[in-house]
Length: 326
Ligand code: ASP
Image (cartoon, rainbow, N blue to C red; front, side, top):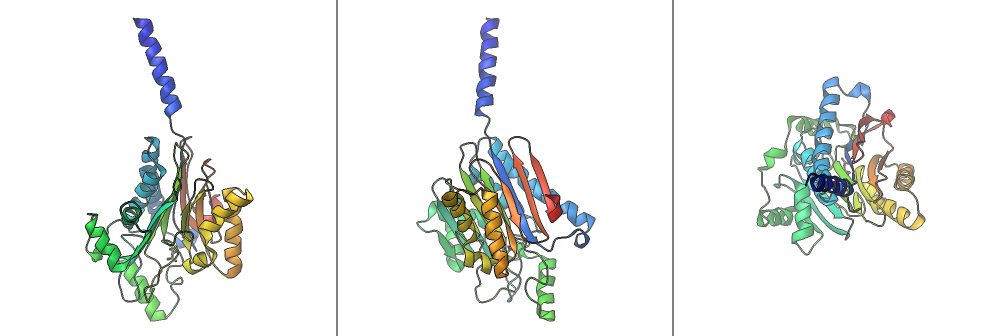
């Protein structure tokens, strides 16, 4: 009897070891002129804590055998709710003083994708993008239509004032008063994103943003544009970008990186570095996070810093802000 009990315990522990999913998660909270002298000690600490919480949310999903799709959504939701980042709560203002939110999500297993632009009332735009992917026949919804679809899907709604913070309002006022460019008021992009590979080797990507301070005329950036700021393909990699959206759209950055991996046999890091270098020659700045199905996760950016973090099932955990942190 005792022997049988022992045998059972051994079998159970070995099958648990077999079932332990191998996963990787990478997240970002924007790139830009992020240097030590520009952040206070408190800001530095707060950002790292927020990245850690998002990493934890996504890691929990993956550690329990959940999908990469669920993990990237969970991680991005945490960053959307955090006013430190330009997504969801804390999004930048349009020229007219509104918050118009863009988001996308993509499943590398099927290359199903969903995206929204200029949403104004959904608390977590990334979840609205996911609803577009799963509950509509479309890939990309915008403005009033996106808001209407969100209500019909029963997603949590908030008053538009939920997204607004005094600091973002101040940045808009400064931009208008000094007549400076959208980049000059904050010197960084605060878009958030996540890429992951789960225990079944499937990759997924999600990105969420308020866009650029003072954006006008219904401007939409790269974040929700599938192939520009967001892409996932199990045959190659998953990408989420942040930076000067117009350049990322022109180069089709996320798809271009995946295409290089798939067709040229480059590693995700090599492909990301090559495409970011090309972006730089055109005058574009920003960064990407990337992972292949094998878990070879990395980042690449041509700005002084990037809010970024990585966790794996092997216990790797890295949270970084400045360029010299590796
Ligand atoms: N890429 C975003 C956009 O152009 C901005 C950002 O990364 O913060 O809308």
